[in-house]
Length: 205
Image (cartoon, rainbow, N blue to C red; front, top):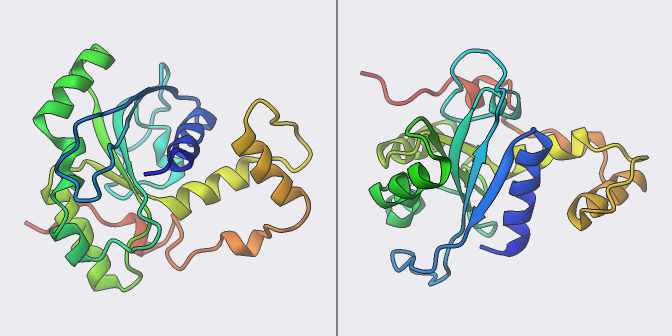
């Protein structure tokens, strides 16, 4: 995972008023790519009241999360088809006992959830639902797709504001300011309010 992916995710949560801390893992032998994956620990002192967040999170539901450990697996060259999920045991790392123990120490609480950021799920309804079922079976509590996250950030950024302290936000703001990013480009086949994106809570019992 590149530093840019991590920085974008970090600033997404900061825009949503979370306190964010990064922890770099140096022992991630389970991933065949051989690259260590950092974790983000997020906390919101005053979470907004609301219904329990869905498994597939949209930005409007993130504010209901109080504490979480977050891992970013933004493999932008791939979609997270069921076969990808099945063949990568590392996707369950954020829900592992070792990660939970670390999160309890960092967050100083046993009350937290976990969030996995993925590049993109398949668009077809059946493979999409199957991928979500497999991720849930690994112990993942919530999933966020990278395009949804980016869309929310771009929607929040003002083309006329100054985000100079953040090179990431400033770059995104300039792209928006000079018309390289149009509103219609933020529309996805499965927008956050659609049935395909919000109704999943896990396999039927």
